Length: 523
Image (cartoon, rainbow, N blue to C red; front, side, top):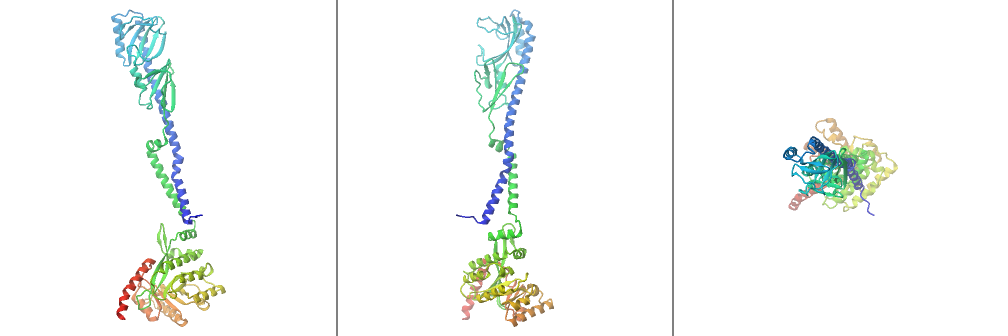
């Protein structure tokens, strides 16, 4: 069964939590926004119905007042004077369609038709009342409202124009379906539509409000707004802010989850992610420019911080013991990528090791695997033991030194004279070389004491039969002085800076290409 890489698992976990943080503002705030939009839709319709009732009641109040004012005309003959009085009042009122006088519950005089002959089928009006009509004989498709004011024998009938009803029911303050008025089994809707029975309400949600003064009801309907419509159209600004907030939360959460809980855990994360890269700094013999060796230096290519120099992470790696698997990974990578290059015979290849390498891990097996990747004698592997920590020369450590020497691996003391018990190492351990610290080399020619120390180290190495490497060589004067002393190897910016392994292989190939014609000519 496939098991994802630990680094991939951590990244997927961070992405999952960051994704949750991204949608969290929507999960928390989108439902209230949608609920508010739906509640607002209902409140808006309710407000529209209440306002429509208020307007219609006001118009009906005016009609009642007009009927009371004209009540003295009821019972009088429908002569020219009475007709003119009715017409004057009807034409002066915007929404009044007509005014009629009634006697014994029947209309006998109208502002539109004048004297009206009573028909046996003509309706009888109550003493007073409100009636919703679908139409009349003259205008069967135009509904209207009748307001009748009377005493049973005589009365006044005021007809509210149906066009006013149509406009009022279709007002924009209501839903797209607008409103319907219903009374005495008749309903009237927007656009002068009228009917009886069930009201054709189209929306999924229905609202009903009744007038407190007149016997009619208003109905309206609406559809609940879809959450996509609310968030993407009506509340798009807030949605954009939620997206921004979610992105910020996701970014901060992803960054916080990516922070190391400790330097050691960050080093292990980088180890799992193969973020440590080998940089090689060439070594030359005095008087030569040919790269006959190199020291492998570790660099950390951090995904956020970029390339990190070794002095910022090597001490922590050594203190935590993570340096051991880091070096093992580095040796395996160098063996894999450098074994295909054409190296000079006996190429000096140095790796830095610490005390932890001799007490943890499998240093012997790692050296054995590296040498096996090259032809016999192609590489002279050197382990440069740092002196930042004291290595106790136990029987097991002494045995490991002897085994490494039998394998052909040399062990030299790095930064000789600056750390712990260097002379004791020379006395008890199978050391093959010394590395002169760059702090002494840098002061050659400027400080007589530093020159004397370098002289003494080289003299001591010569008497013990040890190789010497001088690091930090930056000037021709330093190189000449060290060459005269008999130093075995020179290393420093004068020769070349540390470079990625691929660049080192390319530079080595260029050197060999340039030296090939010279060798042919001399032969």
